[in-house]
Image (cartoon, rainbow, N blue to C red):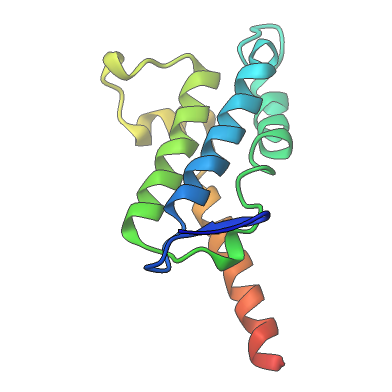
Length: 129
C-alpha cells in the first residue's frame, strides 16, 4: 500500500481506503452536528444546503485521483442516502425506497455527479498540459 500524507493508494491503483476515510470523516462531521439536522424546528430548505455545505464538502476532497468503479459509485450513493434518511428520520426498517425518500426531500441525487464533474475538470486540465 502506498501512503502519502495526502492520499492512500493501494498497489493495484485503487483508492478504497481513501474513500472509506472520506466517508468516515463526513459521517463523523454529520454526527457532530446531528442536532441541527434532526431538529424539527429547522426547515428542510435549511437542512439540505447546510448538509451539502458542511458534510458533503468533506467527501470530494482529492476525489480527482480516485479510480471510478461501480463499487465506488455504490458507496457514494449509499452515503448520500444515509445522510438524507437521517435528516428525514426515515429508518431502513420502514421499507421506504430511496426514490420515495428523495421525493420527500424534493431533490435529485447529486453527490455522484459532483464527483464526476470534478474528475472531468481535472482530466481536462491534464489534457491541456
